[in-house]
Length: 431
Image (cartoon, rainbow, N blue to C red; front, side):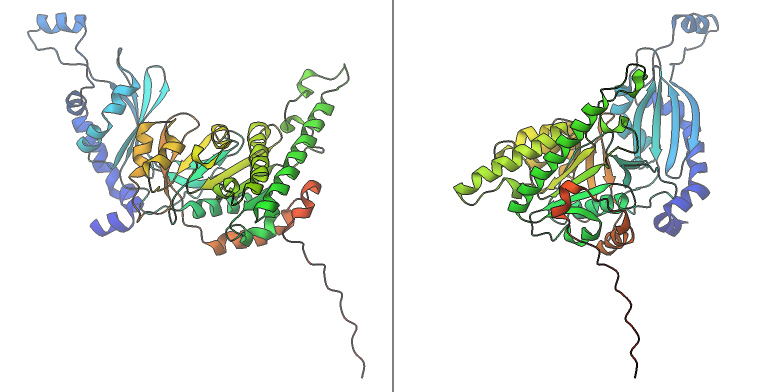
């Protein structure tokens, strides 16, 4: 059983572990709540009743309404007492974890008066096993597993732009491969800007609608993307001049409200090593740098309504890069911080979310590549780890779905790979 618990923790938990934990939880629930300071003094009626019966009134503990078993632990539904809040339970997570001998405890509010306590029985991030049933949808990519056992889905509709920071060999490239592999079978145009001469994004060329691997090409490509965005806004504005007898629901302010037959395809722009766009070697390059940064900020500010999304990654990103860096970072709502070399890099990504998140990002071990700290769209932060995706897996997916690569006329000059025409059969030679 010890070997099973180490090698196959899911099998051990579903076979034996849950029963022992439920028995321990039911037996020690009241004492643990009192020891962790989560109980309240009895009400006046209970005190009067206990005095009439010559008994000592017991303290009141939160009521345990339901226990649900999952593949990674237990989910408790608790009704809190008057005067308590979620922060009281969040501050006691470490004490609850040790009291019930669990690997992790996560607290989440459900509705007024009720909260969810998720108990994790083993380290789900040690060996990442994604569930068989994964959420699917346009612009939704399951890319990692969270420390609470849930699947982290990169949803471009809810979080249009994202910043990914991480040191070398931290798992940043694996995270990017997972995104490319998940977007390859979808009707989405993928655009790459890789100023490291394309070493990161060039292998995906068969599925890319555009690719730039030098600062000069990146400047022209960003201009073309802004022109494409302008054309999409003109299309939206033209659709708003509707006949008076049409319903008001037909009016839209983004491309998703357009009829499907005229709706342009979404565009996801991958920017690898964004610092290369800000660096200049000569003063003559300063004008080109300012133009690129301006166009990138415009895409971040206005691209959501035009279904154009940014995935910006780099080892370091901050105001020291130059003018426009702070404005760009403010528009990147999604934040992912892998292992970083200094605390300042973690503060750049997660400092405006939580100081605890910054500390968690700086404590990621080097022997666990792919582990990162993310800012959640619902508020707060979480630890995640991406499953290992080899370069061959991502390239194979791009090759398999090459026929789904949309042709965007504005980006035709930057198409990295044009399918070769079918060879004509040769006439048989006669002797």
